Each structure stands twice: as C-alpha cells, then as structure tokens.
Image (cartoon, rainbow, N blue to C red; front, side, top):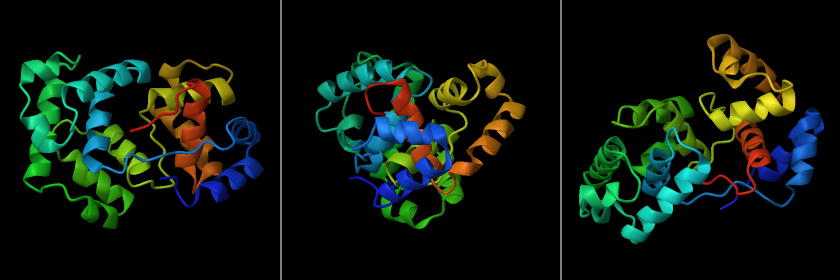
Length: 212
C-alpha cells in the first residue's frame, strides 16, 4: 500500500531541495510500499541488520523457501539448524525466535503500536531482544508508514547523503556525533517528509526498491 501523503511529500521535497527535485523526477511513479504485516517487517529488519540489502534479500528468500508461511508459530516450529541453513547467524536465529514468541504471546500488538507516537513505538520495540533503534525505525517507515523518520544509523542513507550532498565525504565521519548533527541540520529542510526523502536517497543507490 502506498502512503496517502506520498504525492504531497514528493511535490514539497522537489520544491525545496534541488537534489530531491532530481531524484523525484528520476523515480517518478515509484513509491514506498508496505508488506502490511508487523511480524514480517520486524523479521525482515532483523535479517537485514549489519549486512547489505543484496545479502539480506538472499537470506530472506532462503528463509521464505524454508518457511513458506512466515508466521510466528510456523517459524517457531522450525529447527534452529534449519534457520541457520538459510544464512542466519546464531544470534539472529535467537532474535527471530524471540520475536516470534512475543507475537504468539501477544506482547506485540500492531493496532496498539499504530496508536503510539514515533518515540513511543521506538521505546516499545527496543525493549525486545534483538531490536535496536534502526530496526524500530524501519518498522516506523515500512509498516506504520510514518512520514518523518530519519534513520541516522542507516549506512545506505549516510552513503547517499555523502554522494549527493557532501562531495563524497567519508561515511565514518558522518556516523560520528558531529556528523549526525550535521545530517540533522541538512535534513531539516525535508521535514515533515524525512521518511520520503530517505526512501529516494536509498533508491538512488540501488535499482531494487528497499522493502521491509
């Protein structure tokens, strides 16, 4: 499902920022889409932690083949060795199984999360083992489709900002405290559509749309 705000956000970003104007024209007709499933979004985000989008897609495809009904109870029914065979680390297997137990025991309620503001969603999700701020922000963007999330821990976003705005400045500098503050200032022009700007910047790096 495409966010209802997308066209308005695209127009406003293009009007305010020359880089966004170029990217929104290049990728006209393409939008953020949601899997529409809270468990799948969080599971896919855990799979994608600290690896490239391409590698994460490969692991996710193997996981879907091993567990065609990728639901909490179905995943818990799989042996840990089967999940590791999909390319998951021991730690990520533990995280995924713990996430599944949270859903089975109804400790995560998608409707309840929808009612919270962004900061409270992050606080609620990061209390779960294996879910850090980045994973919670992916959930905000892709599942809840919140419009103004800026995931400063995302390597792809930092790379794209370096390429399009900062003449190839080393990404490790942008990941520092001073670099993050600099990006927040740069991104202030995108508010309240920072999720949308982030999506276009991701898209500029990879021909395959990012999806969680």
